[in-house]
Amino acid sequence: MRSRASRIRIAYDPEIAELVDDAHQSGEPFELRWSDVGPSGAQANWDSYRHDSALSVTWQMTEAPRGIVQANILTRFLAPHRDIARKRVTWLYRPIDVARAAAIVQADLRAANFNMTSSERPTARDVVGTRAAMATAEEEANGAGLVNFGMVVTATVTDPSRVADAKAAIENLSSTARLRLRWSTGPARRGRVPTGPAVSYEDDMRDDEFDEQGTALDSTGETPEPDLFYGSVDEFVREYLIKVYRRPVGAQGGMKWAARWWEYPEALSRLDALWRAWEHLRLDPATGMSLWWRDHADHHMPVLLSPSGPFAASNDQNKRGEPLPYEAPVDGLFPDLRRKNR
Image (cartoon, rainbow, N blue to C red; front, side):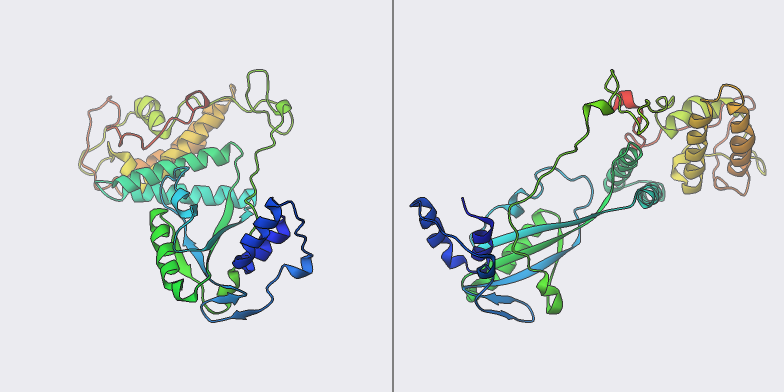
């Protein structure tokens, strides 16, 4: 097995790889001091880096894959390629502070909902993006973290005349991986990193962080608050709100409501807030519902039903005593967030 020192040395001088492997196979020691692993000669050019027997060019990621990412999306990108003598892909990441992570997730969710509801016919990309934003919000709420991450890709060739082929190969491979890479020039081309083996890690959650039923415990050792009663804002509106808050809507100059309420960004945000407040306050058997009606429902519903509110252009109507108009949203827009359905 090659030592880390020899791997780094080969990264700078690929021609000695065969010599190192032959020495290991014959049982001869091939020892290197750390002072010897760097290049014996190097030249930093505007768009490349010449080192010993090879020449390297570097790209930096400017945009990660969009939408849902499958586990094998980088398989072809990471595999060896005939036009690239050596290829190094380095991931750089930094965890985001918990408080900032929550704000980022909510902002992404609001943006996804806006994209979804800003058109009468949402695209498939909008639907998938909203699902992904909701899934991320759910995972973050359950304790998952967020990270800022980037990628540095270096292609090395032993024949400088093949550098154009290596560039074309990287650009084609990045397309299959849905990555956007930018060729590094000037000071940025120093991003070349001769990496060692990839490092993998797993969550070190201990068994004592779960109760007897396998439910995760919080930092105090107690089980978390009860599961959601309504699995989504859509279920809350459909099964509860439109039935308990019955008002005649649609008359000229009267109150307004839209059966497709989820197409209106302001309304979606307010209804989501009403649902989450209801889920929290229902746990208070004494004054919870009174507080919800006084501080939340009686605040948001008059705004939503106002003739000048978010539903002002809607022509949907009902009869006195009937539930508010309702039409089911696009399938999958509001997945069930209850733990039993995960």
